[in-house]
Each structure stands twice: as structure tokens, then as C-alpha cells.
Length: 383
Image 1 (spheres, rainbow, N blue to C red):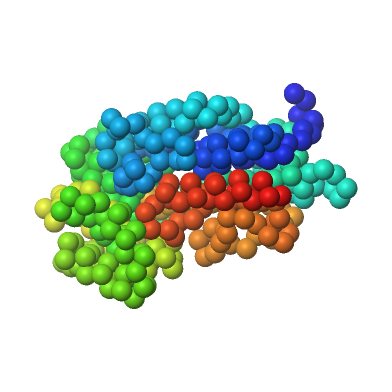
Image 2 (image 1 turned 90 degrees about the vertical axis):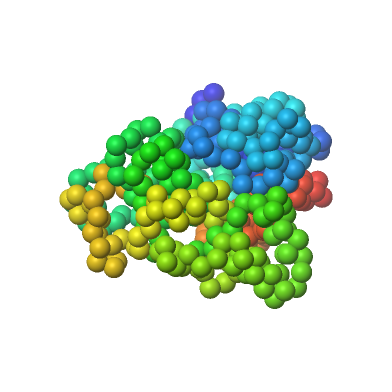
């Protein structure tokens, strides 16, 4: 197709990960012309390229997309490759055929008097006009990699966790993982389990919860607690955290002031769901240092003045949704984390929908995608 061609569609779904696949599946029964595109060259691209050790931290019964459960043979916490296979099976089950290799760089209002409300332009210059546009590009669209003081002087390697696959390339090296979210905690665990000398730099207090308590998934407990009045749920979540994890300040980890539920609800920050990192920290296998003051030629000087040698600094510093750059002519109302506050856009954003960005719900992001995808389908049907 010529790069200047404009095609019209009833609905354009941008992103063919879990959110895009679920939304397209929910729209399919409406009999509309739904175009599903993705910038990647393969379906389930993000999950294909996550680090190999990764498993879902949420149980499979609460992580499936609408219309297809995970296989009965899948374990409670599905591994990375299992998620990839599920997403491929999901697309096949619903007859979804994403068009791959189309990176959208701008979404703008369509000219007045046309059938479309919105026009999306790709990096290749292709224009796709649509009445409805579903943003399913994900909360992790763009790596967040802040420049560290003294970075130019560091004699080792600096890389973002996005580029981490397994511990093999780091054998015999000293690795500092910067940041203790779920990714940083699990990569540090993966490294030390494979004999790599590993430390964590943690500058802020954190909430840590066990993945399971007495055989019960913490995910299910958090969902139950979220249904109580906020003060009760927060108090019980704090009590459970204190009993099961306790005070880790002697190891360099300080506990967040607010409960895990409140921090999720108000800040969109998921607690660290521990699968073994805390045990290795207590055993002295993973050192915990404070925030970084500066990098040096041979290592890192920390905020407490201590200086230690490292060969690799691995940034587990998260991602950005980076939505604003995709809407050059429309002002987006986003929260402090750069996420849209609503699934259905209003006002100047009428006809735009956001699926897969609600990081404040107990039970995990995958659990929230289904209801959002169904809400979009209902709104489009009414329109």
C-alpha cells in the first residue's frame, strides 16, 4: 500500500498486547470494521522479550482475558512462555489478525465534515482514519532510564532492565540493580541464584508482601480487603504485611508509611510481591545500599558515603506510558504517573478509549483489562 493512502475503519485498536487483543475480541461480535495494529513485528512481543525467569504474580483464574481461560494444565502462576502461548491462542481463538510493524506516531482530530473522528499516522506515513480509536499501547511503552550522576565516568556497562534476559552474560561480574520494584527484586534474585555477585540500590521506602500466605495468594486477599471500608482494609493490609514480612530496616530496606492497598490506590504503585528476594537479602547474598550519589570509574558512591566496585549498573527504573507525545494537537488529562484517569475519553477526546492503563486496581493489571475492554465495546455499540 502507498504510504500516503488513507484508509477508513469503524474502530482502530492500537497495540496488540493483552489489552488490544481483549478489546478487539469484545468488539468482534458487533460486526464492525475493526483494525488492530501494533508497532512490533510479532504478536505478544512484550511478553516474548521479558526476562526469562518471569512468572505472572497473579493467579491464572484472575489473569485470563474475556472469552478464554488459561489451560487447565497451566500452573497457578503462569510463566512467561506460557503467557506468550496463551496470547497467541487467544488471537487464534477469536480470529484476530493484527497488522504488525505499524508504529503510530501521531493521533489527531479528523477534519470537520468527514466520517472519521480521528486520524492516526504511522512512522511510514500511512494514515488510518476511524470513528473510534482504542489506545492499548500499555503502561510500559517506553523505558524510563534517568541519567545518573557521574555516568560518563563509569568504566562498566549501564543497561535498562528491558535488555535483561538471563544471568548468563553477567557471570563473574559485580552487578548493581537500581530500583526495587517487582522487576528489580526478581532480576536481583535471578542473578544471585546463578552465582552472580549482586546488590540493590533502594533509595525510597517500599511495601513488600509475600506472593502466598499459608497457601493463599496475596492477590486474592488484596481483592477481598479492597471491598472493605478503606480504613479497615488499609489496617488489615498493614497488619498482614507486618506479620509476614516484618521490619527489614536492619538489612537496608525501610517500610513505606502507607499500607500496600493505599499506596496502590493513591499512587498506582504495586507492592513488591516477594518470591524469594527477601530471604536472600536476609542471608547476606544480596546487599542493599541506599540511593546513588555518583558513579565512579570503578563503581558507585552511595548517599551514605560508602563506595563499592561494580562492573554493571542495571536500571530497574520502570517505564512510561508516553501517551502525551502521541496526541500533538489534543491536551491529555493524565495523573501523576502519566496514566489516563478514565477508560472512555470525553470532551475533546470523545471517541478515544484507554485500555490497560489502570494500575491502581487490586488484583493486577491483567484482571482490570477484561472489564475495560467490555466497557469499550458497550460504549462503541451505543455510539
